[in-house]
Length: 354
Picture 1 (cartoon, rainbow, N blue to C red):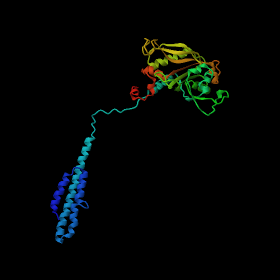
Picture 2: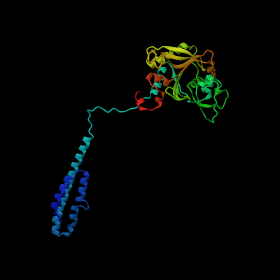
Picture 3: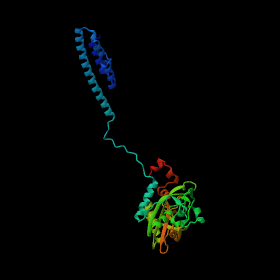
Picture 4: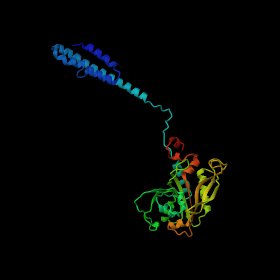
């Protein structure tokens, strides 16, 4: 049998040199495991005489106790050192400034719609929703645009295929109404007037669709805000005041000049285009206003009596104005955005500016 003193000396050296807790575990198995060198000595004691067995057994047991203590102390030492290393690696310097967290930004169209709603709500207007899939009646006929009216060519329409036979109380018994993606938010005017008694003061923000070529200033899908105000004594002067107040607030202009230029819309009479002095050059004639000093920002007019009739109202004694404008166009003017297609590009370089 090898000398127990030599064994202890060799084991002590290996235990002290163990670099990690895992290496120390391997050392423990080597010396004190079931097939360890010290365990082997204890197992071979049976081959010695009784006197030698007692002497060698006592010395081997003392060696086991000593090695177990050395391993325990070394394990505590290694784990303490590992914990200090980990703490040093994960140390937080509380004097450093905090890391800025990246966060999302509001889309410019959402920002524009919220701002538009807020301005009109302060003027007493309520925001109303309506369906984006419309019937031919609400999108055209009820707005004084019958099937043979040449004004239908103004709206390039997405017609939908459907097996449904739709019927409305205002369709005068007609069935099989064709479905389409609404080309403007004006149909909600009629829907609202069918269910509510005047006076009205509403806006209708929402998506509309046009089947046309896409370029820097046109898209097949965009947002529009329709406005309607109806009472007994509403005049063009009321409209001009409301629209001037809105555009002054929206564009942040202290004083804005508004001009109404004669135009044509089937659902209003008289009809006019709303012109404001160019906010980009302050009417000094730039490329945005095509060197005219004026910008066309909306279409409007006094509600046609036929629209009141189609909504089930008696037009006698009722007067009101309606208007509409594109949200993307206003946002492009306000934020100086050159291409309408950027709104749907999802390009973070564009979105993070707002």
